[in-house]
Each structure stands twice: as C-alpha cells, then as structure tokens.
Length: 302
Image (cartoon, rainbow, N blue to C red; front, top):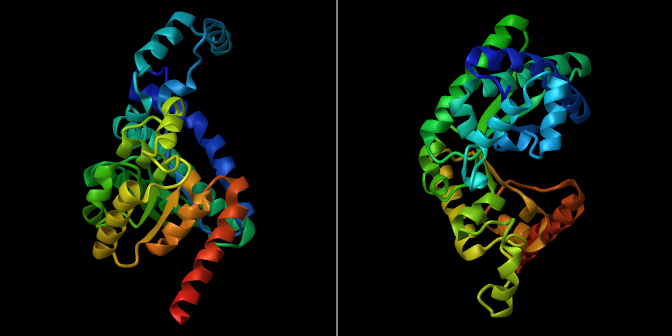
C-alpha cells in the first residue's frame, strides 16, 4: 500500500489488508463479550513500516518481487526530521482517506459478525488521532459514518458505535468546545500532549531531564507523572470546554500516565471518566483509582 503510486493501487492493496484487520477485530470483540472497545485509527508515520537497512530493503524487495531501488527511494521520500510532529495521525487519513475507510469497514463488518457469533451487541468507539482542528475531525467522521451506513445496507445488521478523538495537541485542548460539537468522546493522549506542551521529545529527554530534576527545575519527570500546572491545566480546559458543549461527553486519558497513582488521583479530581494504560500497569491504576475515590468520599463526609 505504501509503495502504491496512485489511489487505485492503494485501494487494491488495502483490499488485501481488509480481511486481516477484520479477523483481528472479530477476535477482539468476541473476547470482550459486549464490553466497550475503543479503536484508534492508524497513527504511526508510514516510514516506520518500511525497511531501513540495505539488507532489510533487499530482503523485502525480494519477497515483494520489486526493485530494491524503488523501496529505498520510497523510504527516503517518507523519512522525516521530526516524525512525532510529521505525517501521522489524522494527517494520514486526510491525505489517504481510503486508509480510514478500510479500517472503518473492517471494524463495522467485524462488529456485526462478532455480534452474530456471541449474541452480544458490540459497543464500538472509533477514535481519530492527533487532530488540531474540528475540520480535520469532521472530514474523517463523515467517511466513517458513510462507511457504517454502507455496511448496514450491505449486511442488514445493526451497529452501536460512536466517533471521538484523541486530544494530543495544545490547540485541540483550547478548541475542545468546538470539537465537541461533533466528537462524542475525548481521550487525552498525555504522552504526546506532554511532548507538544513542553516542546520536549520523550525519546531524547533522558540526556537532560535528570539534570533538570536534580537542579529543582522540575520535581518529577513529566513523562512519568502528569504535569498538573501545564499539561494538567490544558486537560482541565479541554474537559471544561468539551462538557460545556456536550455535557455528557465521555472523557479520559490514554498513556503511561494512566498507570501512575499521582496522575490517576489528578484525573479523579478533575472528573475524568476513565484512565487507560499499558496492560501491566492496570492493577496499579485500579488500586490508585479506588484510593482516589475513597479519599474523596472520606473528605466529603468530614
């Protein structure tokens, strides 16, 4: 798909990916037995999917029966100086909407298939990543909704889904009231929100963050525990503005902060509905959430 030179060729490649995505989603929905499932649309920069060393390029080219020079040229074309702020997230779907359409079709077909197999209605949340504007979100939401209607018409099935977004950029926090006009849920991606608020690359911060903490400039690594004064304030603004527009909007955070007890306590204080983190941190997150809720109840009784 990445090597395709036009939309027709991309769609042909995506048609081969569709059944693979659908099978994964069917299995996931069956395991979840009717519990809500949030799926983030494709997010990483495309160059991350390509081989990089000469040996890898030659091996992949041989398997694909293509010219290794073509593969190397495409890798160079897609390489970026700062991929975290580059051609990723919703920007992929804006440039290549057929990618989002394929993922949406795989999701919706899988939801209907899994519901038939298990008898449990699939509660699906489709999440659009890395938006900075409402227009970006609305363009992709329109594609998702159109795909849902097409799948319903083709299968005669029913779908229970919502479309929301991952808030990862300061501008999105500030524009949350406008974005909530069409977005049905927010997930604050605090890993990238921390990077874009501080202007610090998480991958490169280890060389100097220790010095900052030692000198008392920062009290804790902001990638380990959420920065309440800066990043946290942006989240609070986003929550307040989003709920002013859509009072019942579901909001949470996604990232490693979701497994940090201090960050979980902060999320509870500002009224988030959930935290999401990597699997091995779930027990810590649940315990921290219980402690935060108990502490609030004790304080109210006092």
